[in-house]
Amino acid sequence: MKLQFDYIWIPSALGGHNSPPYEGMRTTIRWQKYLNEFLSCARDVQWIEFSFDPETLQGKATCKFTMEDPVPDAWLRDGELIELLSGFRVLAVGRITN
Image (cartoon, rainbow, N blue to C red; front, side):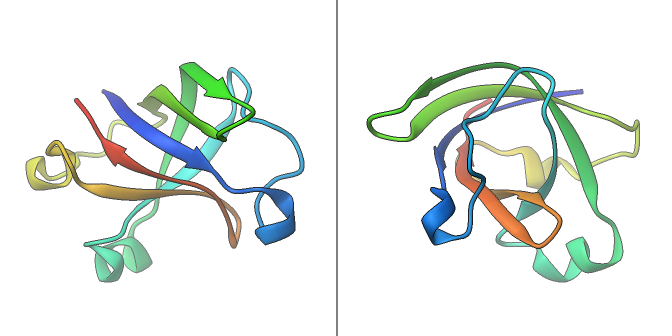
């Protein structure tokens, strides 16, 4: 299953990563609205296509889920707010645009 979203990359000075996103990168996805569910079941995604503007730190991405665990349809609606994580670090925040 694939997921498309707009995002803003968090600079390392604010806790993000010290380099820009890259093809094949794997992150954990967390829905801001469904935080309690995330605590019991994390989902990982792999970045397969993306654009990134280093001036604005914004871009668009397509990711695929690394496992075939079902994701509730409500979580995949346009406009759902997400966070992309590496461990405890928030690398990006975004909005689903499927």
